[in-house]
Length: 414
Image (cartoon, rainbow, N blue to C red; front, side, top):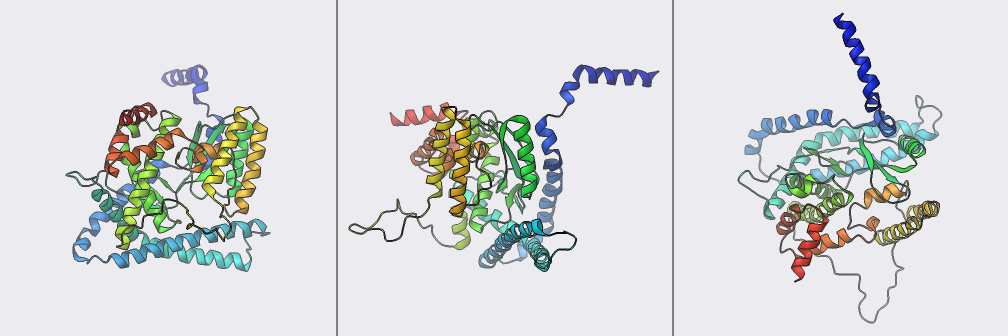
């Protein structure tokens, strides 16, 4: 009797609330590829701190050899970039192979080389993580981010393949509306399959993109980038972690503008901290960039002007915005397809250029993909007005929306 009652109650719940339990189109499309955050945390957070505790006596015995540590880090990222090139080559060759079980000689050799390099990189990883974490942490201390506990949260990252992410945007405007964190290393076929299905079933623009890092804890930093890019990513993701304990970071997901404000603050500060970390590793002072590309008086440029990715992308974004505002969705999409070919021809292998591309990359308002973004210009103005990086970050951290930034800058002009 009790079992029968339970069955009837379960059926009643399904009938009453069944709609709430049905996965939507997006959930179904990405289900086989979703990145499992919980499993990743359980597998990495305890492991990182257990290793630090077990290695603690070694820290007291070892002499600091920054030059050797930097050489190992450079080797680590050289291997990562080689692995990335091998993966691209394997995708091309395997697409042409008649049978994956009987690969040709080049595929077999690339796979063997990949195995050797992966093993070599894995052996270097723990020491390289410690080196880069130290460099970023010391740079944060130098910038004023230190309490009685030291830098908080402690700088902690894992150098591994970074997850991909699904971005979706309405077709009639550029706005990040939905998405999800997906597995690392999805191939072109898997990405196209997800995007095509979602675009057909939702009439929205979709894009699966790589990430350089994710602000979990420990953060994830891609292992196939250049050393200078890696330290900038570590700093960028640390800023997100630091902001999470403050008004701006806690409101990251509340609106598109707040996401843009968070990302732009992290972009600007992450680049500065990353530069400081590189200086610490290299033991040399920063070389300040020149204020602009100026030719000496009375001379003319001999070389033809180089392709300026950011300016070309900014021009593309502005034109797309104008076409969408005029209601010409087909025209905007045809224009983006044409521009993608231009970028590819210039050496920038953009797989797909659509509304979702700009919804993702445009959230970094100090880049060309944002077009002319008021938030980007304002955040850069805030940095110029700040006497230090610490002042800049502590001021921005208290903002609860773009209107706070407006008021702050307006007050500073009086």
